[in-house]
Every structure is written in C-alpha cells, then in structure tokens.
Image 1 (cartoon, rainbow, N blue to C red):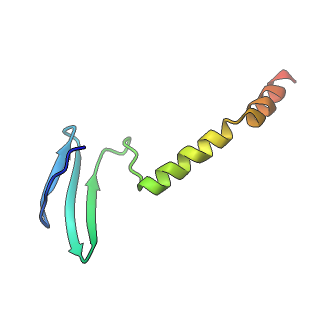
Image 2 (cartoon, rainbow, N blue to C red):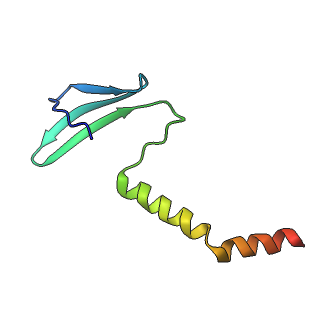
Amino acid sequence: MLALSRKKGEAIVINNNIEITILELKGDQVKIGITAPKEVPVYRKEVYLQIQQENEQAMSSDSLSALSDFFRK
C-alpha cells in the first residue's frame, strides 16, 4: 500500500486518467472528489463488497441449475 499525505485542495493522479482531490477536512472525516472516465466504476468499499457478495450468491449452484434447466427447454 502506498500512503500519501495531502492537504485540502491537493490531489493525486492514478493511471493518467483518475484524479482524487481532497475537498474538505472535518474532524475525523475527509471528503474526497474523484474524477474518472465513465467506464471506470467507482464504489465505496462497503458497497463494492456487497455487490461482490450478491454476485457470488447469484452464481450459486441453485441459480446455475435453474438457468441450465431454462435452456434445456
């Protein structure tokens, strides 16, 4: 992991096309702004993990067998 220090208004650039800017510091919270191409998905980690979990559940054996049965008809 790369750890960087930034002040309000400062930014970092990732892969030439993603910019993360520090917008506000308030107590123990940091507000950031992310500029990225539309095709790059950006999620809060807890939302990303929930999406991953739902995708795993959708790929469970029950779902796959139901889909297999659907195509056999």
